[in-house]
Length: 526
Ligand SMILES: Nc1ncnc2c1ncn2[C@@H]1O[C@H](COP(=O)(O)OP(=O)(O)OP(=O)(O)O)[C@@H](O)[C@H]1O
Ligand SMILES: [Mg+2]
Image (cartoon, rainbow, N blue to C red):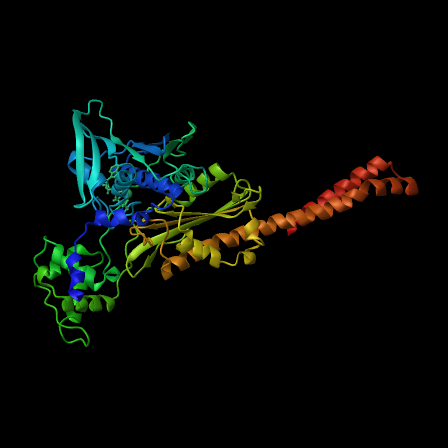
């Protein structure tokens, strides 16, 4: 009887898995699903432009078509060559980023194909693409064969790209989505993208016909992201085992170690050799001249133990590309016109032993900072980013939101944060963002990450505190001065009558000057 269970034993493809679990890709709820589509396409455009060192221009159009919505995203990036076009947009876990340690917005190889799958599941229609890549213009429809996770390309037309323009145009028709202008809408997403990418010009056409363009405030393209090799301290036994078995270039473990990781020099290889020569307790013998493909699990374990006994230089952080304090400052000033902005600049750190990251934090106070509630009151707002891509959902699980909640804001003169005109900006920058799910909307609260976000925010809060105390002091002195000035006129008349030495107007003028200078001195002194 029990054996009947196995009559239905079957294999499934990754695409089939996501067909059943599309919420894991961010497709849950009609509004969120639409924002997810825009997020996936816009992050891809920005990544492609950044790698190709092109000043990005992106146009997003959202059109209502009966019960469906058409989404068009057009960029001026490099486009995608014909050879990779199908897989890039019609196959899960395929792309140029997953296998590299490089700071980009995308990292899993499922975002764009996930959108193709979602279009297919909700309207039965493929996506339509035009790729202008070098001297070719490729136009085609793409869908996914869900059973095999392979792209299906149809109606393909290939033309000569005569005018030399470059870029990708994607058009998809989606069901089970809805447009609105809430704080989690595509509009907000694009506004926040503009805020963290001052070199970007991006426009959105809303279903109402309204078009908004956020123009770039600088022509400086951020430096090209740099790929880095993994650091020995960031590796697990399984990582090392897999890497050794999958590499083809090196015939000895020694050469593999020297060339596949950062900070492993000839001198470090000698140290590894000494620690794995079979005489050190708890670490077994490893022959560094053996073929990496023959590395056993136990030997990989011994190497990882040896790594943890060596003093390493921290991982290189040259690969990190923060937005920069100056640019954050001008973006926030541009969009929120606050009374006060503070941005923290802190050095890079590492998490999980070997992955470099840094946190950029800023606080904006007053002006249009904070979020307007329906009852016209203002509350604080947290704007979260990972590698400059806005995170609008799953805030409850995100290291940034948790750090914000954990800070005792009252200690920094922010007496009632719920009613404060305060925008809290945090950008997490790394070659690998530990998202809590494939939906890529929340950063996992790893201890090192969470602490660093907290410290960066506390740095900013201290400076905001002195600003707020200054403003409060000024207000207090002003009100004391006003109380005195209220009596000056009456006192001047009384004095004029009593003493007969001068006219009331003269006394009043002198008294006013006296009060002004006394309080000005006081203000400067405090
Ligand atoms: N607009 C674009 N211009 C150039 N290449 C693109 C563009 N969009 C996608 N690609 C290519 O297609 C690949 C697949 O994109 P996809 O969004 O599925 O994955 P990803 O961006 O690598 O990772 P993630 O799943 O985290 O978004 C990318 O790695 C990139 O090489
Ligand atoms: Mg992507």
